[in-house]
Image (cartoon, rainbow, N blue to C red):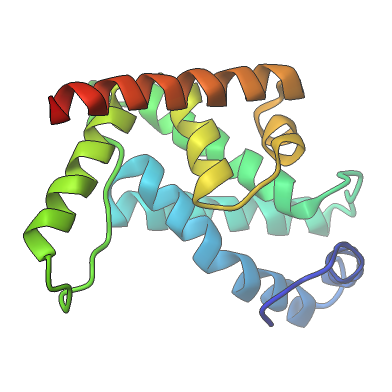
Length: 179
């Protein structure tokens, strides 16, 4: 299942209240996307797995209660995932680098690509948590401004401003690294 339309998602959510197979389909569809998002935010595979597990446990509990008032299950999942990450971050005694990257071992310009990615990650890490969240949802999860706004509980204008400022700050920091 590559693409899930809003209608298909809504139907699966309704079915998932009584049929575990429908929940399994939602799980299989959203697991890789949610895991990637959690991994980018936490920088730790085990923590990302824990966060995603908790997210799906909450989703199952939510559906078992018959609560399907949310307009988008996808947005609701990302909001729950984000809240768990934020709660974990607040509980931890120190903030660690929250961003990692993946690479292809077959790259010819491997060291150059790693250096570029490290520069991007360093610049991204220096942004506020909210700016990081906006940019990651927007550009690694291909979400619209309105979806990001809904997940973060912010207005679209605030999200646009955070994205603009975050990209501007990254550009300035990366220019300093190049110069």
